[in-house]
Length: 122
Image (cartoon, rainbow, N blue to C red; front, top):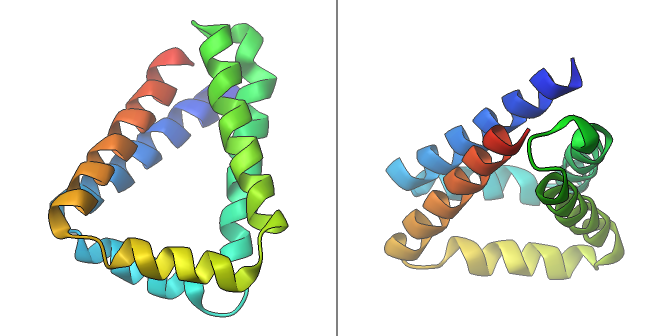
């Protein structure tokens, strides 16, 4: 069951990455939504949960070491959301949303590849 959830997570991440690649303005909409109130903490919670799922299923995956590495990256990045100042995170999002369209498209491709990686190693 958790393996299917991890594969679904990989597909969702890849889908978001491809959506960002196809429409960089989508990124600005997401960031505008996240910057309001304390919604940014939900991103941290989601990252922590995805990281925990990957760590739990690592022993059953095709490449356990890679699954642990990706799970730890996601878990630590989720924890960092709670450790950083809220205004610094908002500033980071503001800076990221002002990047040139080409850079945002390339980062969307990186996210899509990351999702495909999650899907394939689980």
